Length: 404
Image (tube, rainbow, N blue to C red; front, side, top):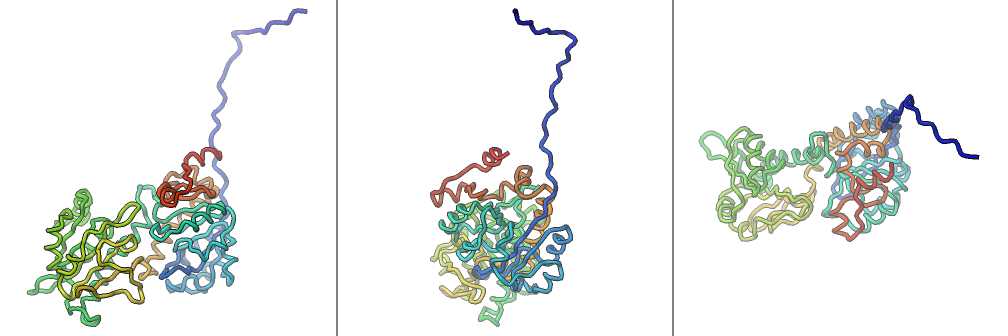
C-alpha cells in the first residue's frame, strides 16, 4: 500500500517560538562570617556594626568572631546589638558559606576554609604565596579581591577609599615627625605669615598623590608634584582647581628639588608588579638633615632606594640624617575610618548579591563584579597570579558561560 503524502496547505500559519529569557532568581538568604584577623598590623574590620544591622534587618545571618572589631574600637556588644551572632570558636565563623576578611587569606586560615566557600578579601600580591593559592584551588573557593572590585562608574571603590585615607594621613604623619616631640626639626608643616612655607615633594599623581597634595595645600605648604604620566598630572590640576608645580620624573630636576624639601612622599604605584625606584640612595643622602620621607609605595617595594618596611609600633628609622616612615597599610593606622569605608562598599554589594539570588547569579549579570574575581570555584582566573606562580589560568567568561 502506497504511503500517503504529507498535505501542505497555505492555510497553515508558521510562527516563531517565544525567546527564552534569563529569568531572575529569587532573592537568597546569605550566611556571612566575619573572622578576627590574625594578619600582621591588620586593625580593620570589613563590616561595621551599622552595616551588619542593615544585613540582619534584610533577613541575612551574620556570625562575628569575638573581638573581631577590637582594632577598630567596635566591641562584641556593638555587633550583637546590631543582630550578629558572636562566635567564640574560629572554626564556627569559617563554616559560613560567605567569608568577609579585611586582610588577605593567610596560612592560619587554610585549615578552616570550607569547600565551595566564597571569600571577599584583599589579595596583596606582594606577599601572596603559591601554596595559599593552591590550597584555595583545591577547596574550590570563589574569591573576590578588594583591589580589583569595580563599581558602576568603572573605578575601584575600596582602593580609592584606602588611597584617600593614605593620602590625607601622610601629611598628618609628616607634621607629627617634623615637630619637636619626635626629635624632628621643630618645623610647623605649612606656613604662617612672614615665614616661608614648608616645601613638600610628592612623587606620584594618583589618588594618594592628589589627596596628599590637597592636605598639604590646605595646611599652607608649598607643593611640587612629579609623575611620568602627563594625563595624571593634568587630572590632578583639574581636580584640585588650582595650579600646582608639576613635572615629569627627570632625575636632575627631582634631585634638585629633594635637596631643599622638608617632606618627600613616594606615591608611585604599578598595576601588577613592583613600584619603580626613582629616588636613589645618593639623592637621599643629599637631602636636608631632619627632613622626612614617607614611602606609601612600600607595600609594592617602595620608590626610594633607602626604604625598608617598618611597623605601626616602630614606624620610623633614620638614614643619612633623613627620617624614613615606611609603614605598609597606612589605612590600618586609621582603622575605624578605613573599616567604615570598606563597609560602605561591601554592604550594598552583599544586598545586591542577595537580590540577584546569590553570588553565582550575580556573577552572570554583573560584569563589574567579574573584574574582582581572581578565583572561581577553584579555577584561577587572574592572569598575573597564574603567570607568577606558573599555575593554570582559566578565562572567567568562558567558565561562567559553560555553567549556564
